[in-house]
Amino acid sequence: MAKHARRDRKFRFLLAAAAAVAVSLPVAAIAATSDGTPAAPSPSPQVEPRIVGGGEASIKDYPYAVFLTDAKGNQFCGGVLVSSSAVATAAHCAAAVAQSDMRVVAGRQEKAGTDGVVANVSHVWTEPNFSDPGKGDDVAVLGLDRQLPYRPVSLPGKSDASLYSAGTNATVVGWGRTSDGGARATSLRSAVVPIVSDSSCLSSYSNYDANSMVCAGYPNGGVDACQGDSGGPLVEGDTLVGIVSWGDGCAKAGKPGVYARVSTYAADIRAQSQQRGLL
Ligand code: ARG
Image (cartoon, rainbow, N blue to C red; front, top):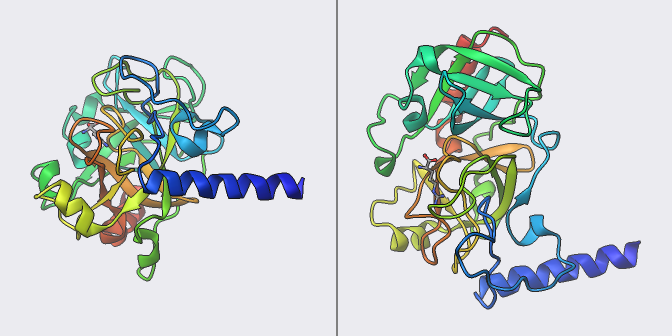
């Protein structure tokens, strides 16, 4: 067992190193390998998919992951429980559908499933400076009309700068597209993406703002969030470090995913969830 675990760790390290020097592409994001894009062969068949790229995830492992639908039940964004009755999401998601039409689906694995709880939105708070995802401040908190029986995510503390050091692995989860321009997932997926340094992200995007945003992804792309994942969580362990916000396409080389930098907004999110939540 121990030997196996050691070998496994060593293997993961080698993989990470390979990814870092961009030798082999971990293909698939929440984006999956298959459709269209010629999939670079997986470095090795015995690699766990959740390490090298995107794969199916269990809602039990991410009980705070929720999705947003319109009144007809069409999923359009993700979100994350920050208390039993408040959800953090992207401001551009909160603005996409009228509050009275918006639903929060929690505790559900399959989009088309019937398990879990569907809540209405009784209040929307949008970060006051938000205008456009490319300008940052892409954060909103939805107050729900009921308490949900699922564990909320943890918010970062003030002194958690290490969460954002380059190369730190984070996990993004959602029900969005499984390739750039491709089909939307039917079930929850997750992908591991390393945090990208501010200087590197600024060279990818001239409008990158290190105060309000953080980037994650591999130099050669291949793993990323995609359309429909917006508003969903980027976590390290059970700590929310980012909220899916924008990118240039999905999983392109040199174009990492851009997330709202949650540490900047943690105090606001906490205050809103305390005020708006039924607690
Ligand atoms: N704006 C997209 C949405 O509304 C999310 C884009 C994330 N893109 C990326 N390459 N990480 O769902």
